[in-house]
Length: 358
Image 1 (cartoon, rainbow, N blue to C red):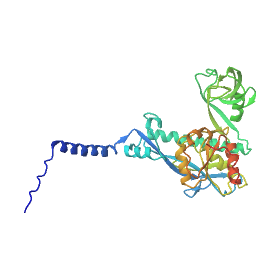
Image 2 (cartoon, rainbow, N blue to C red):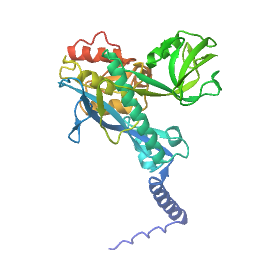
Image 3 (spheres, rainbow, N blue to C red):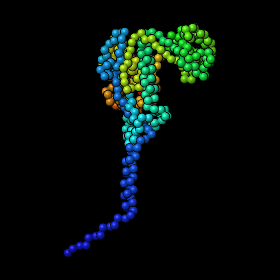
């Protein structure tokens, strides 16, 4: 006995519309994933041992003084950047950046100046790297007790300066209140001891002749003390030849590690004692360690490449807390002296007195 088969239910127009809409939406979402986005994604970049070699050449070369082979490593850390003026990132990459705690996503205008080109960015970063290397060399040699003669030439007299119309671009500072300005520290130390509005007697060299000027200082906008309201072109006469060779890395954030590398190579003690220490931080001629960007990505790059310790600018510590990778001890430093003390303490295996980012 046969049974009648039920008739297939006709597909409703509503179901067809829903299926088509779902397919179209899926295709649009898939396509959107590869549409350029107005973001950049920061990732952990490569590290480099400043005491080692790059492309079979020493990263730091020193001549004119004895140097000593290290037993450990000092890693400069970097940040990889996806996106920017030359190449956009897709929304798929942005979503990946949001989901990956080792990465970070930023609107492109917060990372790069508006309408800047890749060539302009690379030029600026190269200049900052050169300045970073010079400052690191100066700070390291000064820390080791060397005297580094310095020429302080006026680059620009700012509008707010009381020296407008008196001093000019190209003048070379000779003395301030009768004291020689043959080092940047001597100039800063004098001004830090003054207050805005105090009169100063300045002697400059202009076209081979000495020119005297007297004018009031202005208050510093960033610290206590007074300022002249000048930008300076600083030239160093290093008593030791230091050459730093590194390609494809720009910016000022390796300054502290460069300085520590120079000091390690020029001292006979084995400060590192086989330890692998990573770090980051700008370095100025007074030995101050400054904040940098991408600290969380640098932490992850350091632990990925085997570092056990990380020297971080104290001013970056707030960004570090809660984001320290397992197995990495993050030490807060604010000067080259404190960073050098940390290196020696780590090498000696006695880090109990060091300040942590926590």
